[in-house]
Image (cartoon, rainbow, N blue to C red; front, side, top):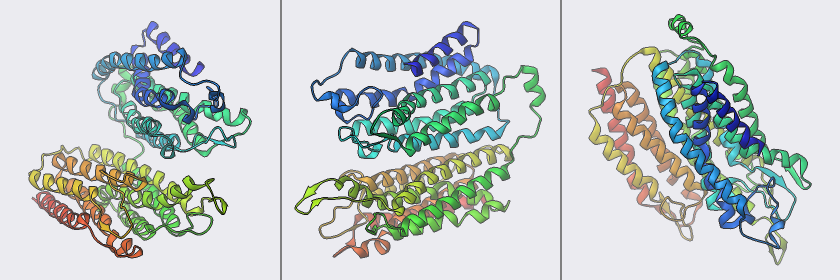
Length: 511
């Protein structure tokens, strides 16, 4: 209750004192995460026993009663009212930003979106550890579909809202937006953190720390990242050098890429389970680890840095593509843990490979975000405007082929159902979806990007498509009677189309 009332009280107090930008930003930040919280809480209505909310009740209390009470409807009404208030506040936010104008100094505050990504990863992990048989603590991907949708909405909206807050023209709006997303995340994560300390049979999980600690850091950094200034002070600072420089962001991107590669390489060959079970996709993950590290030396060379950065902004998805396939082994085993049979209960323990693969997935996301932010800083430094590319038709053809490629199995084998997007949706399907979205996003941006930047992104998309097609030599050899599927031939065509499109963009850059 305190976590819900305090932000609302601050917004009201700010509005009454005339700080409308702060109030509107705070409401907008809360509203940005309200859809995810709404969907997450709807799990109470569908099946309350599968919720992991020890601050409200433990599932053993549902043994003598079921259904939802007036508190649930008040909770849903609160989320809906927050959304409505956010729509109204968005108009004030837009007006305040237009009055204040752009504010692209103090680049060091861009660390806030990176912290938001870490917190998003924490929200997707197990919120609390449990020894209580009535409370089966699970991660977002192991729980019911409705809760998964809510967590995904939260995790997706959090970095986006953080970026909008960081780049807000008005300092008041920036403070409020960042404060709003912090309040929303803490409202979800803090109760389980406290329950881990206070409730018997529960322990604090790593996910709870990853969700709470970065948000506390954002709360500390927000006053420093968005100092209140007068219009005169803004004018005086307009011509000052912006810190940190582009080199620092390139170095940070390279560091994250190297850490991602190291974690992915360890995850590829370390045992996924305690009994040394390996994943068929481990070679593909190892290749993805090598690919994400290869561009990093060129990030430190001024002439090649934009090209390397553009390629890296796509290749991070290769770790997600292969990493989810590798994690499928551990997740399937964890679902079987505790099941009984003729030989007694089945028990599996996650090995170092599963842990490092999961870490690699989080680091890959940070690498992608850092590469995108570095691209923003590059564009700001060069001062060049984006131009519409003439290669629209090849881009559309590549996009259609990419959708078909990731939607169809690369190979087929006897007694093997390949995970896909349209059927047999499983853990590896999330990697397929992420890779597809990255490729489509890169293709879409290439139409409006400068030719050189478009060529770099398209080259990365071609490599990512080739990595997917490489399942034939890297993965299929471990399956009986494996043969190329429709996705293999479509993937070859999509890779060739991406290469042709990149060559056309590079030719435009030379002109």
